[in-house]
Length: 506
Image (cartoon, rainbow, N blue to C red; front, side, top):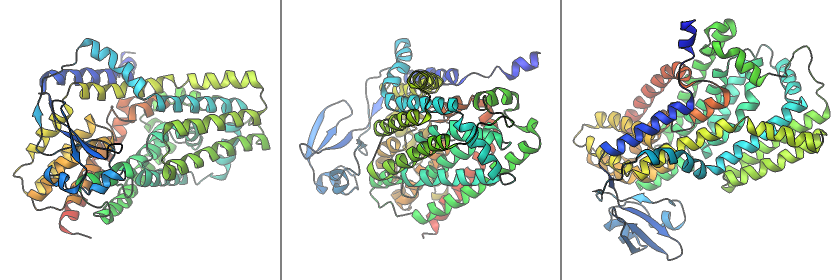
């Protein structure tokens, strides 16, 4: 009995995040506060605006000469055309400033502020939950799962390969990440009916997205903005990143399939075996193989509309610059269409929609609390300090050791700054010139940043993983047990690729 209690005693995602939140607040008392001067282009005044470490504002003429004086090796056109839209750090401008340690009130209010700051993502999650609630009630999911199960009988492994490859393609091209939250309620039942556990579904989606972003090719939120901030073209180092993407996906898919086949043969080998019944009740509550609803035209049309929504969403994000406001509006419209097609009546539709949204309240709050951790760091004025001390750490190293330590540094920075674009604009102007001092090309630093930040995304509580785990009711320790060996393999592969990129230009 005591052994069973011990197994269930690992903290929930909320507790893990609050522990991280408190630790971040403690760091604001330990790490000296400091700021780099920041540079941003103001399109209205057509000037470069410099915000100095202590808050003074200076306007400069928007010319290449102004950037050269600031030691920023970036084409001025990148600022004017919006390629660099966020403030970037100015090298050699770090100053210690008056500390702003975060106390009890700040810790309590940070999750609330985080929810306000991420309201776009949260509304997207709620609308998605409402649609899932309606479709579940209609029986369309059950009928569709049964049909798909028959079609893939004996070839279930294709689910892993197709989903992982497709999501990684989205990650490497247009930064598919937060949007993957929409996939779990739809794909999880399919994976469960195929004989896999929840971890297999999470891995196929989450790791596919993470590796796609990590080995980014044309992702505008990762290597494109990182390369711009480093003053190089994103095509430099592209061939090595493509090789990395292919190799890492092969390693990842083999790893997932090896685990999945073990679970298929013996469910007790699943790292979430003790939660198996609960997870199946959550995702397969109405699914009975012996009593499947008829997969009629109405139910097929509902699923087609949902699929069409995802296709339009991907098109909008990839080509039109959509963000959560547009995606949420799209799925609200899709949800209304599905409600009309379902024929369940206005009252039932509203009841099931609201109930479905309510099921994802926990996920929405996790997203807000995670953002609160970042706000504690920013308000405590220690993010720039961590970057400053990290950059000093690599001075005087030989090039191979420099590459390895730099990737570790970006892993650490990725923990505190989980946003790929945010880390790029803050760190790249500071870190990229360090490559010059050890005789390396700057594309190596861009790749190092992408690999380090992407690798940490596998596990960082301040990123998307806890919201993902909350979506499927899997605790953080079980995910770590599954993913850490793979993380080690991918880290080793990344280091080898970085060394090859440094000495074997392609």
